[in-house]
Image 1 (spheres, helix red, strand yellow):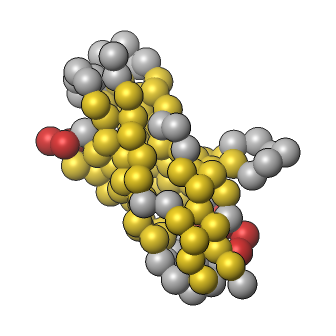
Image 2 (image 1 turned 135 degrees about the vertical axis):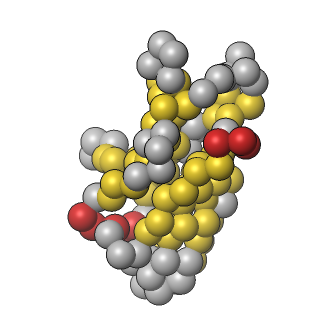
Length: 117
């Protein structure tokens, strides 16, 4: 059974940095797309950043220039480096993998990021 395990969330002051990691356990095979989403209570989950199998990243406008997504295919792991954090970045962050051969989608359990002002 495939599980995505996230780590790296926490509490940080505005202007600080955090690095999130998400690794797949179990036999998942090749992963086409990896991404990070975030959700605030009462709001829809939104895409923060995504990276395809050839390594080209995309970002939400709100995080461009501050966040960087990267992937390690050998480890089935995706990272999100978050710099210059703002209070409005406070949310639960979820990783998302889309498998190559059947496009099955997997979600992490979520990790809380809290940015204090």
